[in-house]
Image 1 (tube, rainbow, N blue to C red):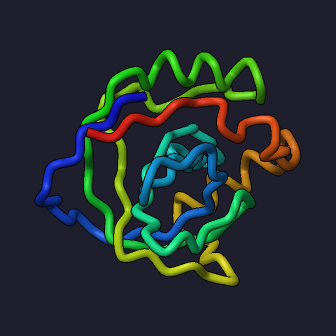
Image 2 (spheres, rainbow, N blue to C red; image 1 turned 120 degrees about the vertical axis):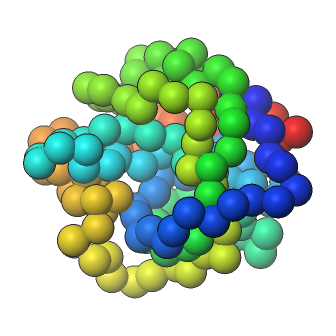
Image 3 (cartoon, one colour; image 1 turned 180 degrees about the vertical axis):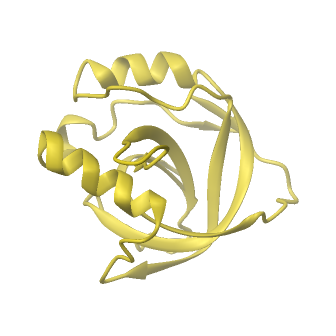
Length: 143
């Protein structure tokens, strides 16, 4: 996946979500999140996290941060790769990815957040994902 990051990011809000880290490139971490797009939904989406202090390990992590949007190429192809490794019913078909900056790692999740509920919905139906199955399976190029 090739991601273009502009020097100035327009912050469109703050969000809390549960992520599964996939790969790291410099200060950026590509992760998987499941978002409750509809009641009971579990829409898979890639997210990018600015993790300049490398606080996030390769494990299920709850984060909260300021959200912007960046352009990406190869999203659909990478979801096809991932769907061969884990069960993905549907995914966000967009060349725009959420980018989270100024992150805070949380111990407990707010179950009212859609980025948390979608993850819970996924786990309830398919069980936990073994991160080793998806770790470093997608190449991340930052421009």
